[in-house]
Length: 120
Image 1 (cartoon, rainbow, N blue to C red):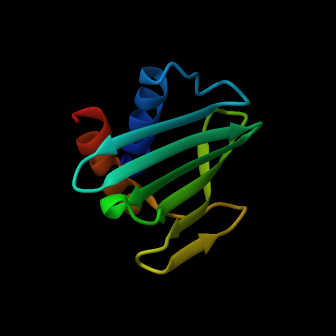
Image 2 (cartoon, one colour):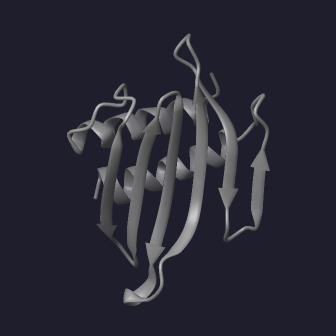
């Protein structure tokens, strides 16, 4: 498994636990906020074998912006297969149901999650 994906999974699992959620719950829904330079919102949602993670931010109490999101197909063997990655600020949309390579992007996102939501 790519280091970026591993780090991202670890952060998401930790944040889910801290919010009293269970990543194995097929109906998981967790929403967490952090007030850094903007108010950041993190949504972790599972529907069956699909896991959706999105981060939004609200600058200065204004409109909510979709910053970045990723959708995983949760495999029977426990792997998280990224099938969609979206970054509105960078105008990026990657989608492929056979899987996409986003390890470096997830590595950077995991670092932000650790800084803003975990280390706080």
